[in-house]
Image (cartoon, rainbow, N blue to C red):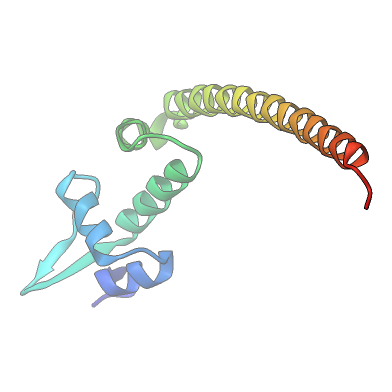
Length: 132
């Protein structure tokens, strides 16, 4: 094993994912390990692709969206198209999250109102209870 190659177990441990997850990405053509007998050896480029896939997943990108952006890698031209596409994806996802945050804030405010009304009704009911 060379210095820039990784076993499936090493990558799984490093990224806190299962070997099954890595094999899934391999089946989708996102990772292309070399075979040494039964052992899979992943390159530094595979490791970078895995990093990007997992980062995309954390920000809500689909696997296809991550795959499309990774496929745009073009260092000869400064990766402009790739970076522009990624910026567009990030901006779109941020807008979605901001809308979800507003919805959650509205829901929380509604729940606070319901909670206040229930508490007031409960207080009134206790005050109206006959005292023994």
